[in-house]
Length: 364
Ligand SMILES: [Cu+2]
Image 1 (cartoon, rainbow, N blue to C red):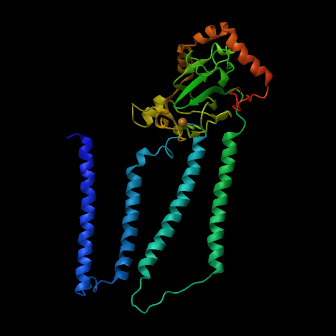
Image 2 (tube, helix red, strand yellow):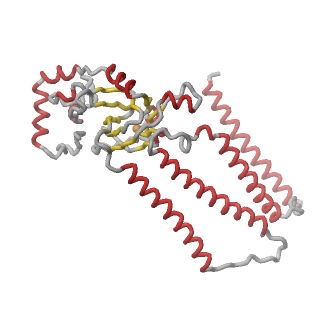
Image 3 (cartoon, helix red, strand yellow):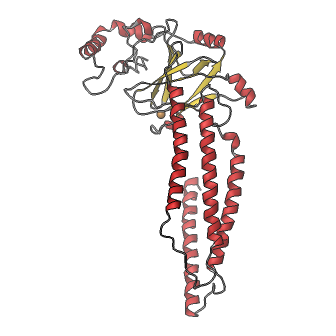
């Protein structure tokens, strides 16, 4: 029997079992009603419910603490940030977690404790009806307002701190997102990126990033599938998308920034721990930093992963030198005047970088 038909037989059997269970319950109910029997006459539902609330509180709290400990190895946040600003992000994350944990434990503890403590003990007992209490209103509006203001103001200052003017000497790396992979670009020896434009993208010719073949600054640009950063150096990521929203996320560096079609975004940060050192810190020789996409951008979203390597400046420069810079389409397309001059004219006619069909160019 093939697995698929076995699966459907198991499915039908499960439905039948549920049906049979329902019929048995219905039968029992009818028998009790005919015979005028109340099987739960001796049970006090208020007492049972009250006790169950207390059991749920204790078991729930223990389970929460145990599972938090059991999964602690998998928390990327709050342990070993690998960037300079990561320490600030982790501090905010920790403060928010402490406040949230305190509030959750106190409010839920009281909720379940009161459900047990004030359970109904005799049938004529009436619930106390509290319509309004100004003091309580002030308290539970005022305290959250003050605490949230402190957390949010802290967040604004930290954000401004991280996103402030990027240092002039930062190494620029371009992240190009598309469904469903990443292509990275380094400026090469001239430290300047060649111009690119969505209209020039020609997958058949291998011009995946849309290099403008008339701009020789692009000739030495290095195009890679892996990200390499020198340690303790400011890195500015220039982030672009050519189709939908993506979100390059480097969790170990506490870096996350959306890639927006038609609107380059930026994030400057400073990696502080090399891959080799992090392998020692984490006691895992297989460890690699990675980048993922954290916007559900389509069917292949799960596959948008890239390895990130942090190394010494010497290693980084050696790696950069090893990368190929040959771009056959520069030679091929440059000779093909018909094609490229058309597009070039189009570009000159419209300085706003917005093409007639409404799409926005990727020019910086
Ligand atoms: Cu994506």
